[in-house]
Length: 291
Image (tube, rainbow, N blue to C red):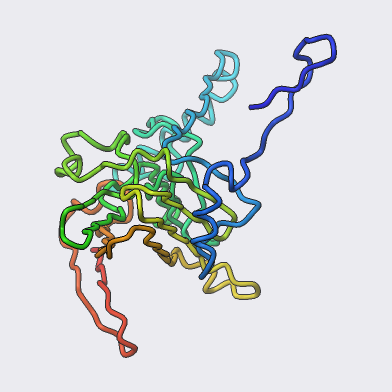
């Protein structure tokens, strides 16, 4: 953060820098190349490099006096949590169970959801903070949910592949990662940036993983004035803009992987069904039926 100093040389005054300009993080030539189909992020936005690490949020403990004053409330909550557990349910308010994922300042623009639940996305590309089940929130990311890219240059001499997110995540290299750590996590993130301006967000890949390919991923949530019903859906649209600056033609494949999940390890509970479909207008996709 830039620091304002007094005339005497002391650091009495501080000025917070809210964000960076676009051309401080993305080259002007890349911004010009992506300046069609809304592929360029706006002038005013919240920005971060994908190589940045989210700061852990500070936690606090109550004092003995505060705990003594809240003893009656604590006993009522403890009784309520045990009663819910005996019925096979998880209490929406449970101060006695610590979250497996530490809270951090990594949130980006959420995927829709005004009042009916939402899925948040971190600025480094992870889908997390699941609030699909009413009253419950699972903050841990589902690492199977990713975008990946595969690039082959004409002649086949140059090939690139990578998950479009940095691989330094807590959810990787654990016994429960189902081999996801073996994917191509080659993106460093120092040339890729996230730009947020609700209800949209842009991720610009300025020569990663292919130095001669510029990518822009635009995330759009259906935040529609005077239309609460559709604005409340936990959905989003991702639009990719690609510009080839190399001399050779490039064959590019974009892949999205998505677990049949509503957060946490729910995709491992079994009984779910995935069904491909083709719509009347020619749009094809996959329906995920979650048990």
